[in-house]
Image (cartoon, rainbow, N blue to C red; front, side, top):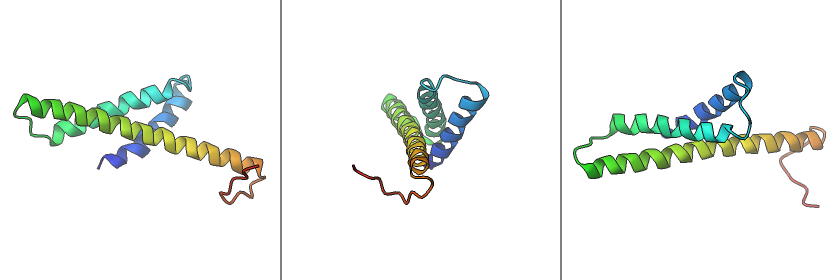
Amino acid sequence: MLLAFIPALNFLAQVLKSSFKLDPHKIPLAIGIAGVILSSIWVLAVSNIAHYQDALMAVFVALVQGLLCAGAAVYVHQLYKLNIRHEAKDGGEGGGVVNAS
């Protein structure tokens, strides 16, 4: 279920970059915060919190899942940028093979 946050966070990064002219170095931080907030909402919606241990577990799960989704979104974006640069360097003939020399 939380895998759906990855493209959503990637879309949010593009919006932040183009609409708000946010410094590119601050976008991963903003995506991380958004990921934690979104996952916190999801965890609280599906959790039955009856004891303080349940609340602590919900906080832990929300933090970890939010950061993992944000990290995956940033990672996917970096792979995309690397592929675009590689294709531009090869004249658009790339095939996904990187020359090691």
